[in-house]
Length: 404
Image 1: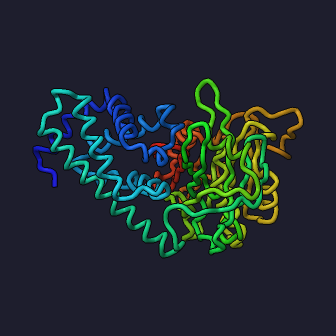
Image 2: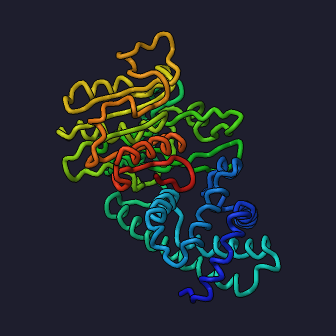
Image 3: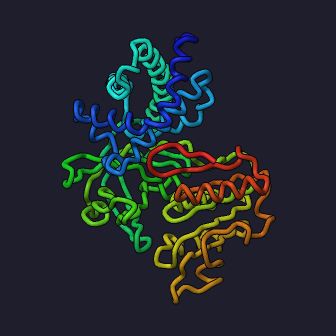
């Protein structure tokens, strides 16, 4: 248990973490992965090379230091991290390795300012945080054993591969052991793991289950990340698109994630997404349709144009057969062949001000998924029109923690 004196030492490092947190976490990852190469297959090397993982950890360490008097404030963030860890098969035995390298990095980066008392304080603080996560993750692993009968990795075969747009392809998966498929909540994700020849590494990635539960396959819909001046090309997504075919085997983890449909009550459901953020929304939409829900459902989606519009016909068919469902589509840069009021409704980026205010009722559940800036913009708009924060649910792909 941290003493008051140790809490004060932790809080006194907050200014240093604000200014040099990324330097610390960069040093930490280089040190840990250099000494424990077996952990390289757990971490997303693409995020490492882009600096995203280092920034995300620096943000998390700072938040923990700022709230050291009351870590329970971070409960939702910790639940998010615990689900990610379980999906990647991170176990209790990994925490001492991480802790030893983190404490050594604090000493090496801070130099003489890292007194023995400060290192001791951070050691106790880390153990406290580690135990919180270990306990949460144990509960999730226990649930997976009870519900799915497996944790860790399980071999699945690609039984179908279907292009959904110019950039997104769906992969239909079945377990090679002939066992049962897991149940999951609409909106959850799995991790998959494949060999990346360019890095000579097994690499995990997390993808939303893009269809409703209860099918004879699991489906993920993967965007091919081509890369540009601001981002690296995705090694895993490009390998899946170009090199993996029907009959190939990949590793799959059990479903996880805290972003999923609230099935209780009869309140309206508003699904707001952009780009590949459509994947959890389609799972929710499909589930509500198959269970003959009489809830009002608004499927609000933005993409560049018709060629980039994944699952367009599938959504149209679902909405057509459900009188209480409505689809509203924005195209930011429609092509000449894209027809307004047929393929899309509004030209330009998503603007909720253009929609009927009757959609936005305080009792509805709002689900957001897409690029971070997109979710920030839509989340702020929802709060401005009076939607309570607890009714706004967000899913951020990639690393780090995001909330409205």
